[in-house]
Length: 190
Image (cartoon, rainbow, N blue to C red; front, side, top):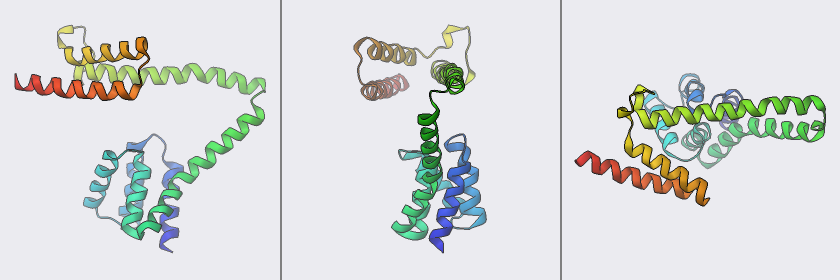
């Protein structure tokens, strides 16, 4: 019965968890703290902290953690399966529909209209992150004296290395992290 409850709770989270990790936190809290009482609010806070620190989506990390706490290895497997099953079914269904109907003019038109929108969404997110890293929480300003010069130098260097030398993005991220960490430590001491 416990395994069924774990599966169903995280199935609902996986099915209704639109908007990414932080958006599913209220759903997870409702299921594991409010509805079932599997964790206290303090344990839930720890759960979110651990889920944020570990690689992977918050919902899946949370499912695995809660499942382990409540039902051991079997609970972890059941809760994680419940969390990922809705996405798997939806993606497989969409892939099948695309394979079957991709030649239709309407589908080509819809996808052609969605492509620029997806690019705009990615560009918007990228610009938001760029502005935050260069100008801080105050946001964009025409006063370029407020630009974080170290962040700007790391950004430009990373962009050049990625575009000109076609280096692995992972290596560029690691190098940028090391340079940024060392740079900010040195600036803090000055």
